[in-house]
Image 1 (cartoon, rainbow, N blue to C red):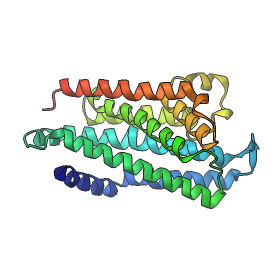
Image 2 (tube, rainbow, N blue to C red):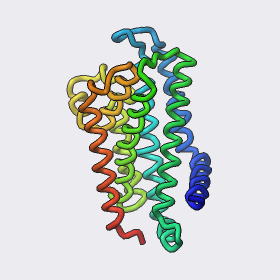
Image 3 (cartoon, helix red, strand yellow):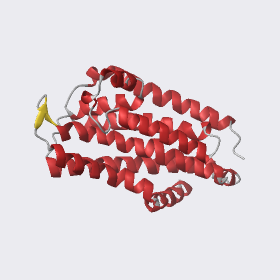
Image 4 (tube, one colour):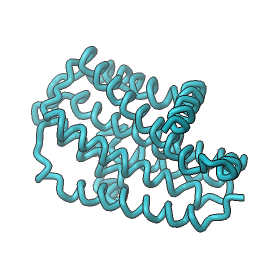
Amino acid sequence: MKAFFIIFKTEFLLFLRNFFSFFFALVFPVLMLVLFGGIYGNEPIYSGKGMMDICVPAYAVMVMGVTGLMSFPLTLAEYKEKKIYKRFDATPVGKKQIIAAQTTVHVIMTLIGIVILCGMGKLLYDIKIQGNVGPICVGILLSTASMFSMGFLFPVIGPDSKGTSLLCYICYFIMLFLSGATIPDMLFPDTMKTVAGFLPMTYAVDLMQGLFAGESFHMYRTELLVLGLSAILLTALGALLYRKKDWT
């Protein structure tokens, strides 16, 4: 455990020094909140909910996407290409410890980003969070697990760091703009809604918006099933491929 905490501390500091990861996980969602909040405000417009009541849980999923689909896999790909994992395998620590530390750092920063976002939403626009803390936390963790499971798979599919970067950018931006994480999906035409139905991030957005509005888990069985299965299956596939992949 001592070795893990030393690695964790190092990875945490490296995350904070990475402008891309720090800015898009902690600052950019708040800027989105301020920008669109300034345009639309938070007056009730849809089923008694204001635009920011709808957007904040969606922006929370955007934070998960930034860390899980971009920062996390790009970090794995960089370490893999520089043979850092190979060096750790030559020590008693092994590469599993450093991957676990990197995962923990990114998950913690995801949660911090969501807390900051919700706090600013409440402070600036008095957003309504009608759901209980427990179900919301479960939804956040499940959605985060699904995003990270996809990101975990990218470095082993990509031939190198450039290939992994391409995968990350394509998947992230497609899901970002078609899932409702930036633009409410109620504004989408039917064709875009059909395409969005194939994206895991869409189910995360729907789940988070429902839980923030105080709705029950029973109303989101499909979302829970999709996110849970994707988290389990993609993580298992990634672990299997990582074991077989040549890390040298």
